[in-house]
Length: 156
Image (cartoon, rainbow, N blue to C red; front, top):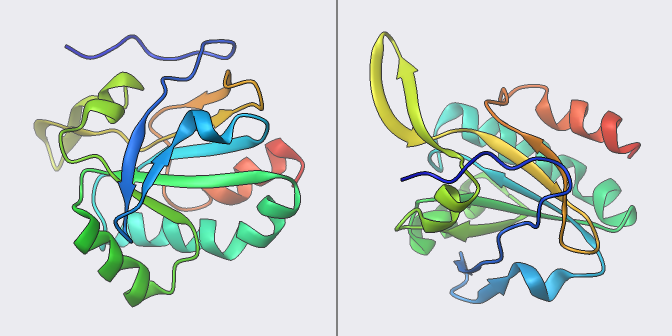
């Protein structure tokens, strides 16, 4: 059962996940700053690599604007560490192997690829404000050009 899609003003579901270094990251620990939480299907695939590299390329500007970026996928921390190393990523990568967090954000569900229908992670991005509320909820985003669009929308 997947949660209802989130909308601006909703409380962002809290979570604690393990990052690629084996450390715990908790969303509610970041109250007081804006957080971009984005979900992607799989590390080291072309679209996900493009998106992660775009976020990494923009991290200085985003951090200067007080924004933290958390990328979440079902991949194990070891695979995320390889992804970071291979592509020189500078954003926080979190592991959600049981997909509980991706489901709590309604970023998991039916997808179509090459005419086949299957269940999977829906590429989605959320901006959580300093109070822990959803500021933006974007589902089915494109990997290419998404970060530039998000930066325009956030004025960063």
